[in-house]
Image (cartoon, rainbow, N blue to C red; front, side):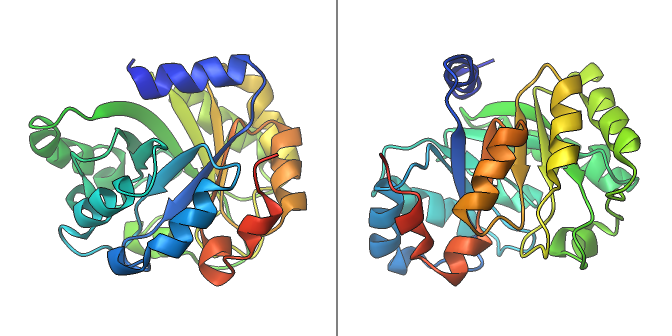
Length: 242
């Protein structure tokens, strides 16, 4: 794998906990980045993810280029669709929605992306994407027409993530969904972490420092936060660099 993935492995081996701020091109304008990015750069964030479930063509590329002007942090595309591939980013999570059974999001979208990826220098990281129910329907659920895995069927969640690893995924992403009512439960994070040998990403529904620390203490290697900052930029004050 490339620099992004190897750097993640190195940081994890050093016992560091990683935080990605998710910026949605559909919700953040390139013209209003200055103040937001200043707060982000002063926080404990280690990565920036860019992506959303429904994004206009070319808006991801424009936003990535704009973000680049304000930060030295790695910028990673977290694509909701093929049109979100941006060669201006450092890497791309090559997602397969292994919690669902819609072939479009298991393999078809990935095939469509190949022609766009071929002309870039993006580091492409195979990533298993697992949607966990959170108390309401999410945009991912609506767009992909798939159902999240039940929170009370922990063994099935563990077996799903392990199957993804055995298929060759290099990252595993447990997702409660944007604007989730409840984050992924600690007992699910812990059970999955105990089974996997690859880095574990957890996102969705995390709106406080307490919830962030709980995800880390349960086994998350990298936590993704998006909606909390969209709703209240003051949350950056809670996670300033030490």
